[in-house]
Every structure is written in structure tokens, then in C-alpha cells.
Length: 162
Image 1: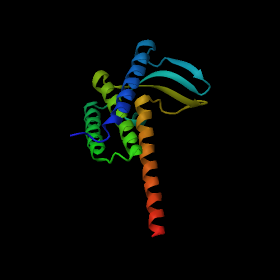
Image 2: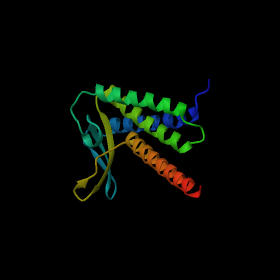
Image 3: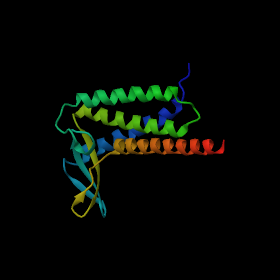
Image 4: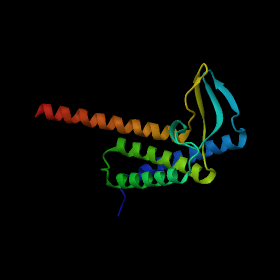
């Protein structure tokens, strides 16, 4: 039996690899809290996040976060299998979220924290540092919302034309 949308899993694999390579480079070449100014308002910095988004629940056990990521991964794989092949936006968004969940779960399991390193700031205000996995999750969620809006728009057009 062929799994629907399985070809999109290469996107997940590539992003997981990119995420892990970038985190390993930060881990090897920057000390904790060390930063490199790249552009005005952007630094590369070595931070360790034991929490979730914006360091919420920092300091807690990593096991619940790892188990949640695995549950999300299983759910996404089931969704990808059941999703019609003609919906590439949904498939891409799911694969982005899958890559992000697995990328950060690998860090939690291997290190006990997630390495964040992209630091955007304005003056003394810094946005929460993030990584490739976080970007994948965010872009995947945005694409899911976009797909839902497009579906809603299509259904309104179809309903008004009948």
C-alpha cells in the first residue's frame, strides 16, 4: 500500500537535517550566550531553551515535550496518509510542522534543551531567539491557516454561485 503524500516527507527530512546541522555548528563554535553581530537588528547567539515557545515552562522535565512532539509526529503522519494528494499546501504545511517538532525533540532528547540562535532585536528589545525548527513550525502553521482561508473563500464562492 502506498502512503499518500509520502514524497513530501523529503521536505521534512531536509529541514530536520538543516536544523540539526545549524544547531551543531552553534554548539561547536559559540560559547553559551556568546553572540555574533550579523546585521543591524540581527545577531547569531547561542541560547539554550528548556521550555517551549518564548521559554514558557522552562526548567521542567523534557519528557512531556518529547512525548508531545512524538504524538504530533504520529498525528501528522496519519493526516498525511489520509490527506488527498491534490492538496499540496496542506501536505507542505504538515511536513514543515513535522520537521520542526522532530528537530526540537531531537535536541530535547539528546541535550535536555533546545538550541536557539537567531536573535532579532530593536534597541534593547529582543524577540525570542529561535531556530530552523521553530521557523518550520511557524511557516507550516501559517500555511495551514492560509489553506483554511482559501478553502473558506472557495466555499463562499461556490455557495453564492449556486
